[in-house]
Length: 326
Image (cartoon, rainbow, N blue to C red; front, side, top):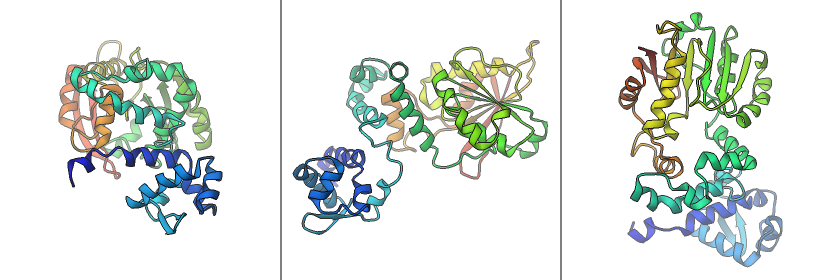
């Protein structure tokens, strides 16, 4: 591999284009000749053909006859949810945000606003359809049903009555926790527009009667007095200052009014530098966030008023860190 290959931009953009046009789905439906395929995709046949020829040369799609295209094993991956590639949805924001990487590296701060006029979260707040697309992508990014076994010692569930999922998105994890533990009541905390979308999730899981929805920022005081506060796919979105503030809010909520511990905080670790490929850089570009190891979380937690109690691993391989307030 040479430097030119490493810096190739043609291939990723071509993938984004065919994903947005749902080319794989059209081929599966029988539109294989380029003229017919272009009509189905509402695209120019010559230009689409040139894009497909490039992708065939890279091993994505096959061309069994000139001008006739077919799916291969790799292309079948584009038949599912392609929201992360779709240039008509939040995928476009992710794709175009890479153009701000140089500014981010030079300044040590995310430069998302240079491309879109507003910082990341403000941009989502200003564009509800974009926020909806982002929430859908985050749900898909969970890669299946979340594991509800968030306590390192499963026997502890007998004493757990309340769980607060902080920044829990549309409630996929909390719904599974409530399904697995019928004696538990859950509270979902996220921005108002996001928690509004969670109602269908809890109803589908049959747990809506045990779920409370709280639409607010997790930088504001959190519902107090719960047995467990969980943070999944949250801290990695933020630099240390903001991540520390989120942990401090959890610590405050997990204390009694006399300052003694009343609950615990469970944090899912996220891969650190070099462990998650482009995902680590994408967090940098979009938000200035980063993955942190259990050791790094221990330091951050201590600064936020939390002491690490234990670490463990889910069957899925996700590492959990349990904290208690000090």
